[in-house]
Length: 212
Length: 75
Image (cartoon, rainbow over all chains, first blue to last red; front, top):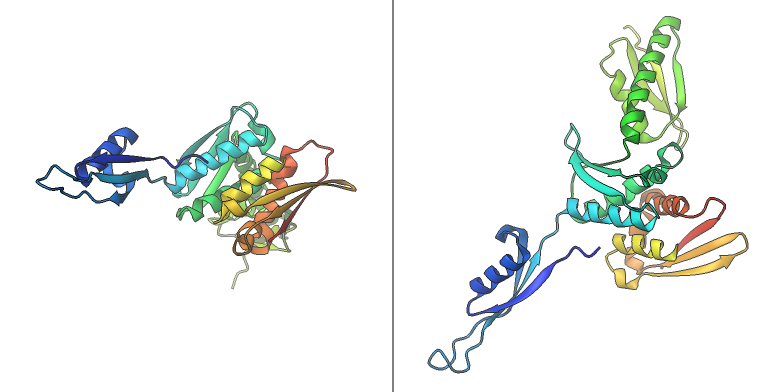
């Protein structure tokens, strides 16, 4: 991850040296860390033996940038060439990462297992860099499409539960997918949902709300 | 495959210079032995092995379908 860009500059004053560094990196003052390597000293009569200021200006890399760089390189190293990683935001302000490309589909895995794994790793890199949002990863809109069909399925099974008066047990699903089901049915006043069982076989149960 | 594990592990730990990955040809497949600084071992394994599991899944996805690959972590 060669993201850390820094330059060393020498000038008469610390300010000037920092200015030179900012110009070279093409960033603003708030985007960098400055380390003064040598304070300038005035020499005799202001000319002789004077020492210039030497500073190291380092571009601060945001956790988001780190996560993007990590995923892009990881995808390439996994043999998915030409994959691009776009950062974004979900409706609930989580940090969304989307991998796209002709070769990206191999990063999905059976039932999205590989997406899940990549998301875990990206989230670790992101949070260790200081990021504090939830990380959501999608590959070639797999999750978006899957989400649509999950919501559809949830509504259908809720109708079935109401019609039969019995609870409906769903297939085992990952945490993310279970969440989608819970969210889809949370506004239905006649239905309650919860999960039972242990990972990776944890299942959502759709049941009728008991009248008191 | 070794390079891939090296890259992932180095991205996760506090001391990337102490990461070593060695390849061993085991009886039924490739074994990748990951060695990290002892303070970093938790960072590579994670709560209930979540991170270790993710690394294994990624390595499996990157390798050929018929290859068995085993990732072992030690300090």
